[in-house]
Structure formats: C-alpha cells, structure tokens
Image 1 (cartoon, rainbow, N blue to C red):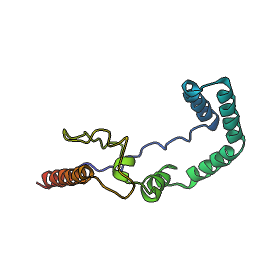
Image 2 (image 1 turned 180 degrees about the vertical axis):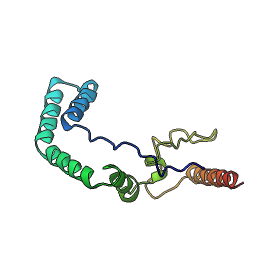
Image 3 (image 1 turned 90 degrees about the vertical axis):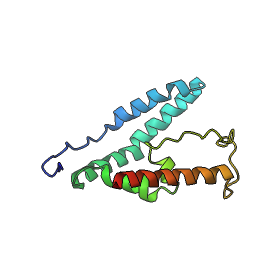
Length: 142
C-alpha cells in the first residue's frame, strides 16, 4: 500500500478577485435579456469588488497564511458537508448519478408531492439506493 506521507501537493492558489469578477461577468453575457440587465450586473459586480469582495479577499489571504494545508479545506468541509442542511447524497456528492427506473412516475421531479409527503416511487427508489449501497459494501468487504 502506497502512503503519501512524503508527498506534498502544492498549495491551492488564491483566485484573483478582479480576474474572478471578470470571468463571472463573461459567464453572465448569454443571460442578459437587455442592456439594462448588463449595466445592473456590472454595477453589482463593481460594488462587490470595492466592498465586501475586497474584505472577503483579504480574509482569504489571511486564512491562507494560517491554514496548514489549504485555505479551502475547512471551508469546504464545513460549508459543503456540515452546515448545508439539504440531503448531501444528491445535493453535494456530485459524483452520484441516478437513472430513473423503467416504472418511474412521469414528471415526478417537475411536480413532486408536497413537502413531507413521500410517493410510493420515492420510497421504492430510496430502498433500491440503500440496497445498492449495501450490495456494493458487501462486494468491497469480500
């Protein structure tokens, strides 16, 4: 078994605030419905860059000095897994993909049951997922 005790990855760089804001604006281009939308977005980004964004950037730079491995490590652990209050299996673990069963209810995702009410299909799907995970675990243990 290979261990990585003597292997050190380079530190994750801090993204440049101005570059990040410009990339964000570029990604918004196809979404602007009007010139007014574009101006409003540019103003919001400019206000962010000169205000809270600048403060956040300076805090990130300070964190990078004190974090032992990466400035992102604790942020990701806390925000993505410990503080986020939605089901992490489908909302955080991006590697997990589901394929609807042949008997899937049409438009279930577009018209889900009311909050707190589970359909038979949802219960069946959760059971199948659990059984699949347990089968996979058994295979690993063998």
